[in-house]
Length: 296
Image 1 (cartoon, rainbow, N blue to C red):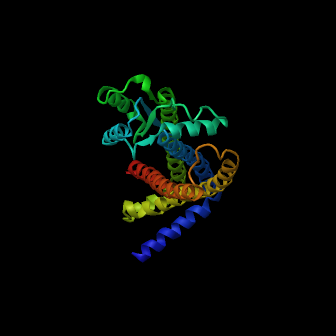
Image 2: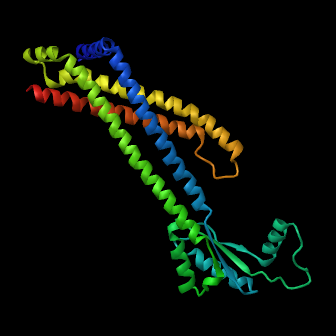
Image 3: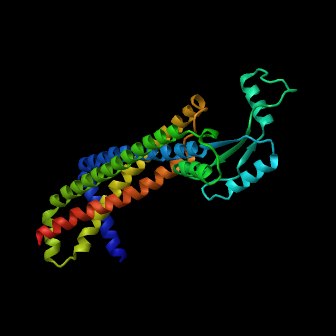
C-alpha cells in the first residue's frame, strides 16, 4: 500500500513538473473561476444576512382606542399566543408614545393638563415577513381590529422580498454556472495531461495495471489543481473582505451590518476546501475514465 502511495505521489510530481506551464495555466484558470465563485458566495451570504436583519425589524402596529390598561394587556396576551408572533408583544402607552414623539421632534406638542390624544399601541413582530399579511388578517377577522387601526410596511416588505429573491436566485444560478465552468476547465486540463502520457498508460494496461492504479495520479493532480486555485482565491477574497468590511463599518455604519470578517473568512475557506476538492476530483475522474473507456 505504501509503495503504491509513493508511486502515486511520484507520478503526481512528475505530471506537474513535466508540464509546468500547463499546470500553472490550469491553477490560474481554476483560481479565476473560483475567485468569481467565491465573490458570488460572499454576495449571496451577505444578502441573506442583511435581509434577515431587515425582516427582524418588520413590525405591525395595532392602535387601541381605550383607556383600560387591563383590556390592552389582555389583548396583547391573546395576540402573543399566535404561533406566527415572535417574542413578546410590546405595549406602548399614550404617555410613552407622546414622550418619544416630542423627543424626536424636539418640541412640546401637548399641554400636560389636557387629555393625551394618542392611543395605546401594540407592537407585534413576526417570525417570517411572509406571515405579515396572515397576522394582519388574524387581527382584523379574529380580534376585531379595523384595517385603519393597523400600520405595517406592506409595500416595503413586498418590494424588498422581491428584490432579495431575484438577487439570490441570480446569485445561485451564477454560482452553479461558475462551478460548472471550473469543472469543465479541470476536465480538459487533466485530459491534456492524460493524452500527453497516452503511450505510457497504454503500456501500463498491457502489463496488467488496473484502471484505478492508472487513475490515482491523475485524480491527485486534479485535486491539487482544484485546491490550489480555491485556497489562493479564498486568501485574496478574505483580504479584500477584511478591508471592505472595515470601510463599510466606518462609512455606512447606520445601515444593516454585513457578516463579520472572521465568520466570512471561515465560510470562504470551507467553501474553497469543499469546492476545490470535489470539483478537482470529479473533473479528473471524468476525464481519465472517459479516456480509459475510449482506449478499451
